[in-house]
Amino acid sequence: MHIKSAEFVTSNSDASKCPKDRLPEYAFIGRSNVGKSSLINMLTSRKSLAKTSGRPGKTQLINHFTINKEWFLVDLPGYGYAKVSKSAKKVFQKFITQYFEQREQLVTAFVLVDIRHLPQPIDQEFMQYLGEKGIPFSIIFTKADKLKPKAIDNHVDAYKNILLETWEEMPNYFVTSSSKDIGKEDVLGYIDSLNQSFVID
Image (cartoon, rainbow, N blue to C red; front, side, top):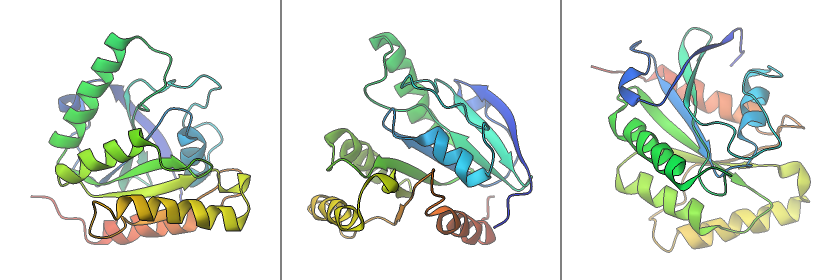
């Protein structure tokens, strides 16, 4: 897929106020500081489409971007470790769950996981939530340039071993690096294939 245009559309904290366009949507979410903004900028070939920050928890709203005027990329707040108040986290949690449970246009979620770390309970719990709600998702392992190939394989295998204790099969996954453009074509190709079969009543 060639990205010809990537434009910011709207930010809000209410799933019912998300765009009404009947376009397929792909939501990106992960633990704070997982490299989500950098990944979005890499995928869209834009340096600052999503705002990057040294301060985890920068994204605090549901952000919609239209890609090629054909589909929406949705940037969601990170979960865990963000330096925000407990009350703010409760608000995030509420509109994130509303988004996932109410948004008919959502085709799949991409759960971002830092490949440098072994499986974290907070990531496993979020994936479990998506599974229980029947929400399709893929895992995107980020920051692959920080590890040697053998270590990458070992950490992916660790996730497989943990997830297969409760899942029938390993969820679809991608290994990426925003700084090296690793995985870009794989992720975009996957989205393109899903777009071909997108149907909404």
